[in-house]
Image 1: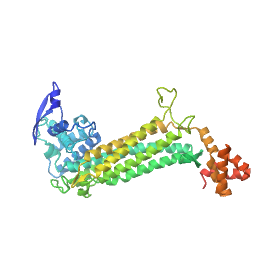
Image 2: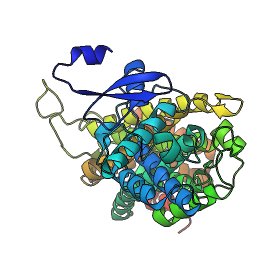
Image 3: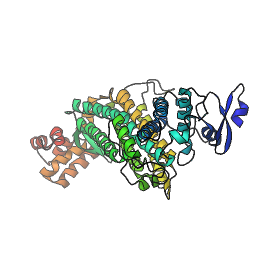
Image 4: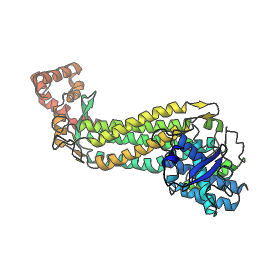
Length: 472
């Protein structure tokens, strides 16, 4: 093999699989099938996500315990496999998983990578050399009662649910809370609204930011709503969904253990033919992530629009000066957090499209885009969590309001004339607005100039604070 010829002073061991002998780096825990895949799937730079590897290891630990309770694996082997699987799950052996995500559509190479690492580490724990397979075999013991076809999608469910519940949602809640705090701080500041990027009627800054927070909160609720479907896994379906090779109670016992370890309820009571032939739950959950990405994209675009300037634009919001904005223009501050998040969320929208295509790629009893589904779901979840953390720490926390700009735009807006329409009629109010704009007058000056209303009546009708809260 090319890698073996290129490396000098490398020691090797010989392992055997169903196709023959394979030379494996002696210091590695992986085996023959992993080494074949390492050489044959050199596509891109997208390794299998570590959270997915860890989730597979969790399932292996649950599987060996279930098999032991059913008398299919003895207690000593169960202990070795459990210890090895726990080491993989905790990240201690992360360097033993070299494969690209672009491999078999079932994820067989990665499942076998995990099986081989656990088996070889278990042999080592038993005092035997790596690759011996004599006391712990990757297929006969680590993969007992399982197939890649049920383990790999179950692991995607587990890894995605963990990531979203433990990492993404807490980050989203902190960002939402930070926006709510700013909304509360500026609850009484009245500003001019804008629709079609044109002046509209007043609202408060608190209402505007509160709308952003509510949008993010709703996105989080949608993600939580998807957990029930994510927590139903096809474990026990083995190759095609029938469960051939797995005891009838194996999956129930594995899910019982998984539920006790994770602190949430995992089930295997769904239709396995549906869960293995397609992955609609994963596609739907990715769509929920897409909605959050869309919300963040909209919000950061709003922020950079309201902050544009500071003197030749709106400049209502003042962004924290995190770093110099230009290599040529001294003193420039750019909306870099907004730009970074906008790019990240645009990437997620593209990943969602790939997931939608992959989800429709089922062939008879199996979807053959599993590694792509896992890669894009986990990449998106991590990107979104990072976006939320970065926005909360480096943008919202230091966000300030330019009160003078807010008041200037509010008081100069022609759309305050809306309050006059119920008093003097739409057509006369429109005439005042057009006259004020054409002559460079204030609304009040234009109204009095046209003798459309008295000064006292104008002041009584045109009250921006009351317009922002017409029902208080």
